[in-house]
Length: 444
Image 1 (cartoon, rainbow, N blue to C red):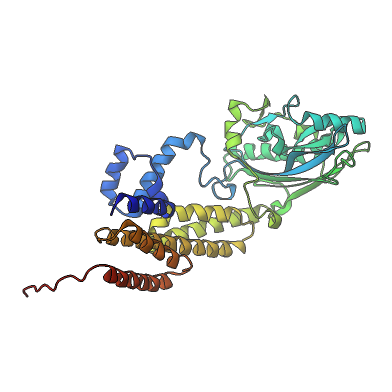
Image 2 (cartoon, rainbow, N blue to C red):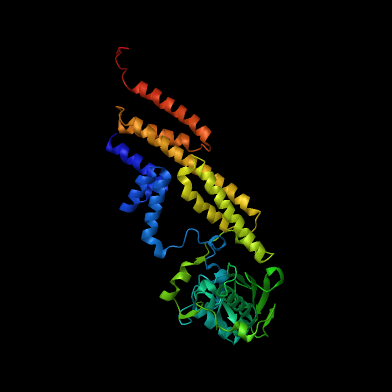
């Protein structure tokens, strides 16, 4: 094969090559020795590359299995929204603020929050709201900073001071009380896990123009591993922020001891803005990176439902590992398949969604296997064309013909049939283009 044909082919194959082939980080000597012991299976090589990559970047990576429902690490999923306000000239300006903070707080894995930086964050909007309503609005944390909430716009929403106080002595007070309860249970050696799951959603009445109507509603829901509520059922609150009106909140109220910041262990705020001490919190924050929020279902039956769902997900992952090991077609996708399964399962909030997630994964695996087979057949064609005494242009045309024929194929059986047809057609063309070889006889 000449350089021209190889270069064109190389670019095409690079786009379809498997992930393991594209990783450039060289494995360590220790891992190479491990490979020699374990053999040269595709899965072994993929494992080596993955371990090498993690060794180089682990301090800045989220765990591939960092979803709270699987590993129970403290983590917060934020979702943002855009709000508008009129500037001094009557023009509508927009800003990004928080809409949802969905926090899984495991007291064995504390994270540190931060206060907002009022000198820099959305100063024009807050100044305009103050002048419009004649009272100040504060940058209210959706997830309290003393429980790992960061002081960034995706965790903040404009709220009146009085409404923020209602939030503090209702939902936030109970959240802190439950966190203390989990810390005490852990210290006493009670049975784990030790977590609080808290979700708050900010809903503006008129998000398109806060200067026309700055009312907002905050929906809060919580369940704790060692909750004293019967059956561990969820606690719910609704907090109303209404300028120039008396604040209102529906739901159980907390005591001064509850909403105090004392005895929260390693959970604490670390001043204004981002600090090095909050690196873990920022790494554990997912902003607008989650799908399926419209169909989100917070477990209606409390702690029992949460733990049951966790166990069912873990069981599904174990079954998947066995299936992958017994399936030669998918063996080389072993680690990619497990990571994709964890991503799909993290978006499932009801047991009925687990089979659907695994069906979706199966379709993904079939697509991966089909793409891999197409890539390998094209490489075979390239190798077979290399010694053929034809011009680069003709070889490239043959290759492109195969690519075009493969493109609409959607299953492996049809692909093998297409391959035989493509090879036959190219073989016939080669016979027409090359001079007939002289007849040679060979002894038996």
